[in-house]
Image: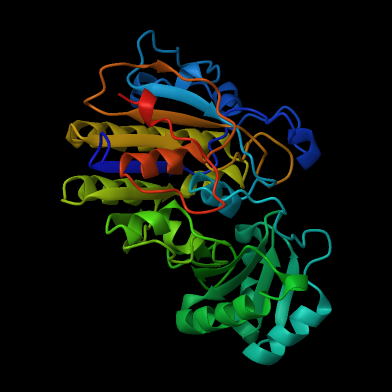
Amino acid sequence: MGNYKRIFVIVIDSLGIGAMPDSERFGDIGVNTLGHISESVETFCIPNLQKLGLAGLTPLKQVAPSDAPLGYQAVLKEASNGKDTMTGHWEMMGIETETPFQTFTEHGFPKELIDELEKRTGHKVIGNKSASGTEIIEELGEEEIATGHMIVYTSADSVLQICGNEETFDLKELYRCCEIARELTLREEWKVGRVIARPYIGRKKGEFERTSNRHDYALKPPRKTVLNALKEEGLDVISVGKIVDIFDGEGITEAHKSRSSVHGMEQTIGLARSEFQGLCFVNLVDFDAKWGHRRNPSGYRDELERFDEKLGELLEILNEDDLLIISADHGTDPTYTGTDHTREKVPFLAYSKSMKGSGRLPEQETFAVIGATAAENFGVSMPEHTIGQSLLKYLK
């Protein structure tokens, strides 16, 4: 075993810190999620992230870099060919994705897929276009409630999303339809990274509200990840938020769904007070889903400030032999055009109460340093055909 009994990896979903060298190939020019949030708001108070050195990784208008930040900091590049949630998280745990997942942004899903989905589910499909989730519910929610039709839509990400009103469509029926859609979209010509159930409540425009009963039906990773390796060695692999969905349950020993990012941090704090040995892997999705995609920099700022407050609580209760890593899976610059993710570098912040040193580490070529570090710490071999070099030797 290495230095730490427990490793907490917290993914601030979409907190990019500047364009990747190849970002223009993805249609993203001059993007910087965190930096542009700072430029867009008057105030920005993140004292705990400041102490951990976040402001030293990209300039922030209101937050000065710490002269002596706690722990270690680095900038991570993405090795994989993509900018979506699954690609980013899979890479953290050793999977390099060379062929990006299919998207259906321009014309919606093919008629053949929609016809089969209608036949198998018994619901007529309405929508079938790229849209914001909140906007398409406003547009078509009343029709769905009145007719029993099914809202299907996509986005710039590789997803097929189905909306269902919890009171009239029924949550179980929504999940059944999504399971059918997942089966259909395993075919190569229709393959998407995720099918997502998007339940909502309300009866008329202006009153619709999405609920926390979202469920993601993801593809399984194409091979074993660090999560599988840890689990096979008898270590705890605890997921918080949508991690269990992103990996389709692979390598997870215990899963906790979250109602919000604040709730996810509360769950993480609760787990830090408990006894386990292994990895706690956390995704906080609200940054991306509520603020990045909806291009709302002030809302994103507020979410970061709420996170920072909970981060302070977590820092206080961490044990001497705990390691905390904070990172992100891609960018979603809320000041950029459209509603898509943005191809960005991400932060790497590592802290333990037992660390004797601190400072800036060299820029890393892959997110997979996170999984490789966990594997080395727990004395576990990286699975075959995975990538990543451990940073454990620095984190002392």
